[in-house]
Amino acid sequence: MAIWQTGSKERISYFAQVILFDKINEPNKKMGDKLVTEMDENVADENKPEHQGYKIMTNLKKIQEKLKDMESTKIFFTDLTGRIMSLPVNPKNIKMLIQKGIGFDGSSIAGYATVENSDRLLLPDPESFRVLKFSNETLGFFIGHIYNEWGMRAKADPRAVLEKVVSKARSEHGYRFIVGPEHEFFLLTGNEFSEKRHSDKAGYFQSTPHDKGELVRNGIIKILKKCGINFEKAHHEVTPSQHEINLEAIDPLRGADRTVLFNYVTQKVAAESDYYATFMPKPFDGYNRNALHIHLSMQNQDGKNLFYEEGAGHNLSAIAKHFIAGILKYARETSIIMASNFNSYKAYVMEIEAPIIIGWGFRNRSSMIRVPYASKPENTRIELRSPDPAGNVYLQFATFIAMGIKGIEEGLKCGQPDVGSTYKKYFHKRISDKRFLPKSLFEALLEAEESKFLNNLLGERIYHNYLSLKIDDWEDHRIHVTPRELEKYLSV
Image (cartoon, rainbow, N blue to C red; front, side, top):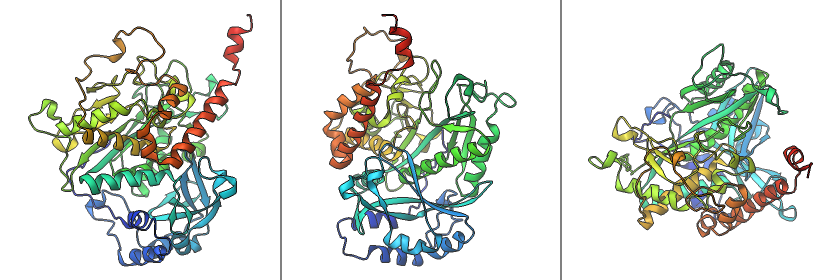
């Protein structure tokens, strides 16, 4: 898990958030000009410890100077399903792009717009600027925000959902969050699948020469370090060809942005080494999946960890248990966010460290929510083990936090923790069982269609567009005849 520094007062600049929330319904104000002025007047000291090693360049002149040395400059964002999108731009125009944005066809991005109303604007976030030094190019990296028109944020931008959840938690409750996702991926020998595509036969923590991916992991870590992102640990995972890299814990918005950057860097470095990196949840039968375990802690405005309570059972606070209870209550109806595609549900299998039962436990890796061992109060946190990296990380973080806050607001009880392996519990087999996470994309869609919570969280636009995309995904699989069906039923 990532390094936790929840006791310190982390400095987070809010220029972008001021623009995104205070100005969202004021299209006539010159928000772009205001942003550039604020950037010029606020030069961040990149060596301050409260930056936690992250070189956030908020000064436009600094960015412009850096961009002179770039072979390429790109603005990155995700479609609604979580796929990484990017737009190469001329770095000489960066000031204008930050002020006014650049147009693109929103109808060609999954979940964003319809063809009759497709014009959208992409605005680079200056605080997200990073310099990525690959072997064959140096890239200027920005995260983009999506607008319908100048001054009007697009309702279909998934990042805006996380921004709203984080802002509301702070303004209404005084809560701040620290997240630490565990990044898992497979390194294959090509992008056309076969059992021979494994890059090694190594297992958990095995070293070179058995671990063929160490050089790739080191290459990823090197690039991240040069742009101010520090790792905590990196190793071979349980399944052959599978790897994990954990980064330092950070606030949710930057954590989600960093995940987009991490996934891009991982796939590019792998390609440079003649490997193919995939975040597909479960490419191999009988093996562990790629997960996106998300660790999270909650603080007040003074930096006190609100999940810690001295003298309570395992020093876990009452507010933490309410938070856990909210996740338990809404886990089924939000499963379509955490496990977002058809393949995701093939991973919910006993004995391979994927949760199947809705529950929580202390140090229990068979539980959906795990409370890890914490050596000191500020490290107290919870880990959600149901998500995978194929989803939209902005929506996953937002949903995780919103479920927990709902549990606090409703005063929910989380019940007793899991004791022993949940895989060894005996249940009569039946199709519908509310004690379990959904077993298929279809079951997850049924839950999501009835969810007022998910509708309110995502907003009508994203909720409708997202479910439409997922229904199409389900229908595509439902009507497709597979080789396994031919093998099994051709003799009928």
